[in-house]
View 1: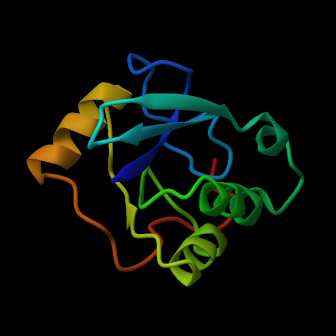
View 2 (view 1 turned 90 degrees about the vertical axis):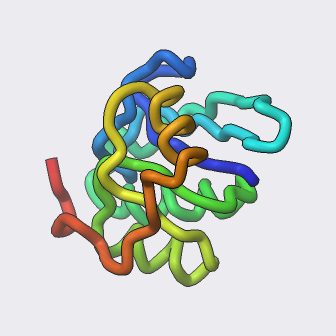
Length: 120
């Protein structure tokens, strides 16, 4: 399973970025092989609008099975949900912490966005 975790940096020791659309990086972590890659999300950091939709499409293109993040707004939520990608919100700590929490079953998908658009 491929997790896509929002991150403030490009390593497993980076903090989980609380923002989905404007996250600095996505860490794509394969739970079957423990291999991972960092994907830069710089194009959406300063976007005037549409960051959530664009980031959501990028995650779809990365073939992620699940998104793990701090918070997710309504447009990103619709984009990811339309592609059948579950979204987990409330992740904290490092990317490695989020992977461990997901594997332990303590992080579960949400049924709705947890912030309004243009959060933070």
